[in-house]
Length: 257
Image 1: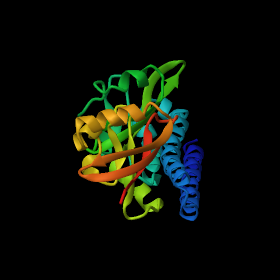
Image 2: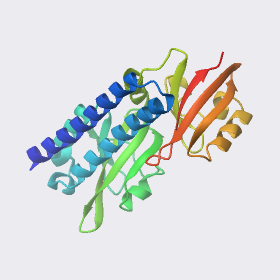
Image 3: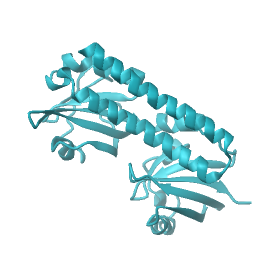
């Protein structure tokens, strides 16, 4: 059974990677900004969506449903090793104790205080929550799915995707002019993805000023559009699209001459 599901996991990850490569290739051929922005957004959605699909597959295995770390560990190790973002995979129990591929065993931390934990333990998937990982200390995006046995949550499979590594993956697969860059904001204008690592997880107001944060909140009531603003004395023009899957807003910005 483990070998069958390991094969399924590999196929899911392979399909996700092929989609990323195909879309990044089309982005280099099409210069329309909206096409490039849609491709950039699609790369993130496909990667995180693929991670969630694989986590769901693992939750259906007898290894995961045993709620025993040693049983499910080989599947989680394979999952972690195959991810392009080298993410940490973890296995959490209802009391909040968890095991991770980062440490290779049980952690001395507990996940009960995480905002996403009650949702996960109620039987719902988690996709896109932002945390400082207890396993790695990295700023991470959480993707997780509960393990259900007879209608009861007995554990959950989760992944902590490093925003630094995901931003780097996008940078290498999305070709933009030297004076242009991409970023993503959550609904509270917190910076999720950015080529400048120091800006990630800060709010727009922290990077610019309070009025700039208010301006972003205003334009982010729309699903897509354009926005001109000034940041650190530079006049910027940008376009944005909202991700229905993640609830984030994806931007491509360029300095205006």
